[in-house]
Length: 103
Image 1 (cartoon, rainbow, N blue to C red):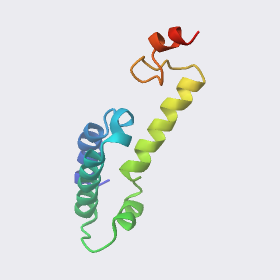
Image 2 (cartoon, rainbow, N blue to C red):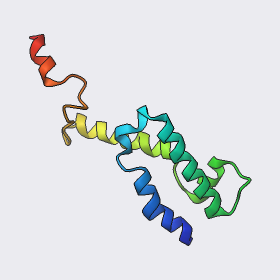
Image 3 (cartoon, rainbow, N blue to C red):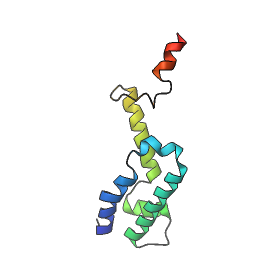
């Protein structure tokens, strides 16, 4: 692994994707910004400024940020459904106060 790639993977990418599963679907501006950072970093790491973004990611064996976000969202939902993780009241579709009024 090249030095710049190691710096990106260990310091920059974790900061960009921190808690991405919480905000990803609703913030298109953040999504585009993060994808631009990854695209630029891929170009620098490969020293290839002419290939397509997906070709660069494949060459580096990286996943696109949006794929990573979808996988993390799916993992959170799987853990919630299987009972391994409790979703907070803010994330649940109907808060407990509304459920009491239904009966």
